[in-house]
Image 1 (cartoon, helix red, strand yellow):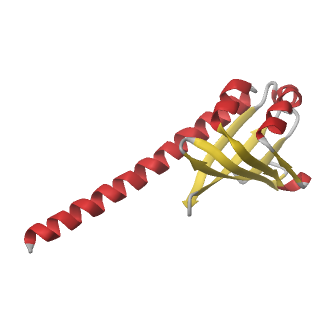
Image 2 (image 1 turned 180 degrees about the vertical axis):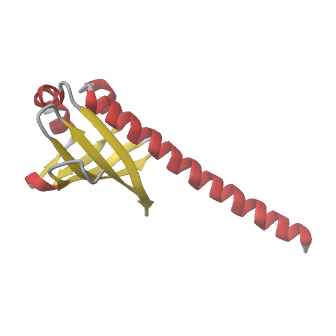
Length: 138
C-alpha cells in the first residue's frame, strides 16, 4: 500500500514538474519573441512562428499568416527604431499565455494585451489588442 502511494506521488510530482517546465519554456519563447520584435529580426521571428500560425491584430481587424507577418517587418522596423518593449506574463491557462506589453516608442507609448499559444517551441497563434494609449498602468 505504501509503495502504491509513493508511486502515485512520484507520478504526480513528475507531471507537475513537466507542466511547470513547459510553462517556463513558453516564457523563454515569449522573451525571445519580444527581443526579436524590438530589433525586427526576421530570421528569429520566422523561427519562432509555426508555419500555420495565425496572428490576430484585434484593433485592426486583421489576421496575418506567417508570410504576411514577416513581410510587414520592413514597415515595423522603422516604427520600432529607438523604442523599448517591456512585457510581463499575466497568466497561462489552457495552453494560452496572456502577456501585458508596453511598447514605448520615441513619441508615444501603448499598453497591449497579447496572447500566445505555443506548441513544440513555436508560436501557433497570437492575438494583440490595445489596453491603453499610455503605459501608466504597466
